[in-house]
Image (spheres, rainbow, N blue to C red):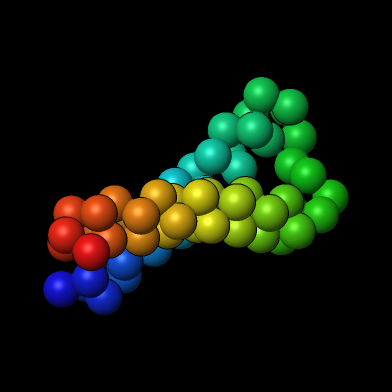
Length: 64
């Protein structure tokens, strides 16, 4: 069951990171030169934070 939850969250983070990057570009008024690097940093930070939170939450809810 955990693998399904992690997979669904990863898919959500993929699309959310793209949306977030586009919002940054709209506010800036122009696309970033190194768009792929900025996207990678956004998704990396969101993924590490979210998965760490989920792992902690799932471990505490399983009673161990």
